[in-house]
Length: 440
Image 1 (cartoon, one colour):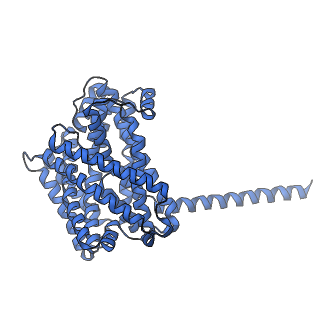
Image 2 (image 1 turned 180 degrees about the vertical axis):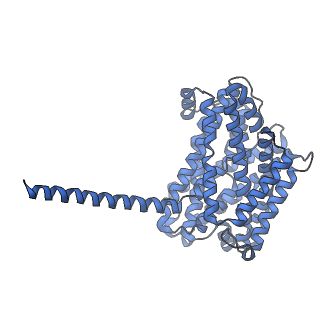
Image 3 (image 1 turned 90 degrees about the horizontal axis):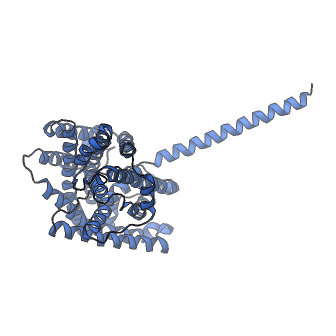
């Protein structure tokens, strides 16, 4: 027997085993580091698929079928470009966006941005609780039961949880958006046609088409997102060495957000548009209409997705607003603070939830006017915030070598100008035309 051969073989197996263990440890370490960073980008992008956003995507699919799917690719780029700049600022400076605005531009501009943001976000919070009420009524639960329970749940979650615990729940909520994928599959769409319209623009030269396109863009990028995203990376203490992982988080979030939008449009295009039901104005109507067309599970999963999206946004919007205002005005902010250490932060959060949910419980409240106000407010607020971001991210004394490159600046400014023009068009149509599509 050749003992040398057996010994060599054994040593070779042992070496390969040790190498495999080292690779597994390295992979586990990289995965741990990635999970330590992942969160803000994925959550921020997906939470914008809220009640108003889903209503807009639903209307797009019902009225124009697959025709607007091509817009999702440039929208993904615009979402990534704008959010990546905020992620970079948070990681490199270790400060939130409102904190930087106050330090670099003074108290007065900061106060204006904070006050505008408060009232705009309050109107958006009302819209999210309206989404909770509407979706639960489809399951035969009265708004006078559903809305107070939802308000207590989201308030208790933030007041009693740590940042890590709350983030895990938010990431689980992101997973529930898969219900829209299920609804789309059950609707049995023409996948080839959907793919074709995704890569080949299909223009309809009519005002309604361009208005819906404007609404799609307007509901994809909201001002509060930038503040929440940057604060999220700061609160997680993500440093410059982890920037590539933070950027990957934003990229995955932007793509996953648009994937969900794709399936919502496909589900409604394959059913509502195909059957001529083009006058669907909200997601609950769409869910009810899906039942006879694609089966009850398609309708119920669509409605559940709407409920999840509304609850998700009803938690994050007031949280983001309270964080932005406290950070901008120099008060303690963050979920990891106790109530006694951040009284202003938790009081603002509580106020936004109580008022937002309370308005929904007022009989005959003019929800459409509130919705229009939030839409117009977003339109006024968005260009201001985007310009602040671009001015800050190009400051070499703040960002060092991480300022925008020339190519990135061109993309960023073109994106910003396009967003501003489209948002102003949307504000104009909301104020001076009836029947404008909703945005989130």
